[in-house]
Length: 141
Image (cartoon, rainbow, N blue to C red; front, side):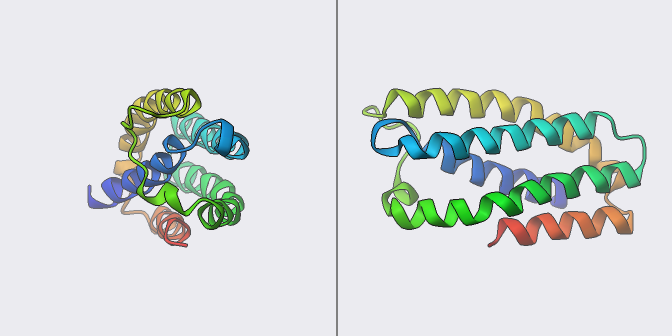
């Protein structure tokens, strides 16, 4: 259970970053947020096809592969826009693009959480543990 919560928290933290992004000044973030949402879609789709621990590990590793590619862009964005680290999601002056991305992220989390809960029964498998540890390591970069 702790591992599932940890994984969901990692996804939520990364997602919160994208909720803070919008158009105008932050228009270059839209492609990154779309890539992130697509990665979540892929994870949810993969998890919904899981029938065994090997499938579960593969789903997590596929998602980790996508996140590994996004991390350099995330670092670049944080360097370019350091104010994003302290931006609040419910800012009343938020750019409409921020609101749009926020709504997409909320909807995506409604799909992600049940999908991740489905993987819980496989977390004791060594292959799944390894994939989960890899994903956590990527999330800490």
